[in-house]
Image 1 (spheres, rainbow, N blue to C red):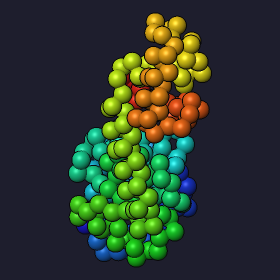
Image 2 (cartoon, rainbow, N blue to C red):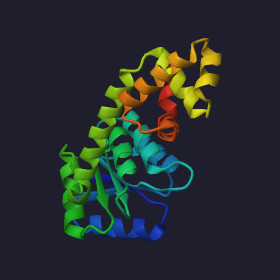
Image 3 (cartoon, rainbow, N blue to C red):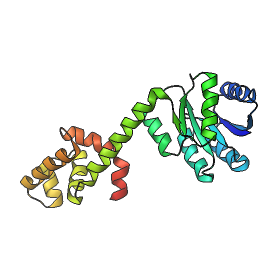
Length: 215
């Protein structure tokens, strides 16, 4: 028997999934949860084989709950369930340890097959979003490679650019000649494939957590 925990903040969705799964001879639903926090507690107690979890819930979302549940036991597999494909959410789900990501529009037979495959240790993604996920992962890898090329001084200057400071203000702040700062700015834009200062500011905003951890 494949032991399943269903997590969704909508009772109707939970009821539908439970009815569908329990019509199959090889499934048993060991719990239902309406929040990420509740899902974690039930997962600790029941140790289900598969968690079918909504990605968007109030308070703790499915991605955060997935990460916590996978921390409880790597044997617990998680399938993220959502109404529409979201590139960032897909990537975050994979990084959180999810084995699959499927759309709620998927027909019943395919959903059942997905749970069975994940229970057997397979990883899966809905075909409509696989290409997008692979593209996003490639983009992230490229960004990390580019960031690794920055020197400490270049990183400091990039942060100051993001704060809206001019080259002269940056020069005054880090005790360099304005011409030297201009050269640094040019190198930064080249390494990160940025067109201008606005793009640099947007880039830092997007990657702020990464930079703050290094500083």
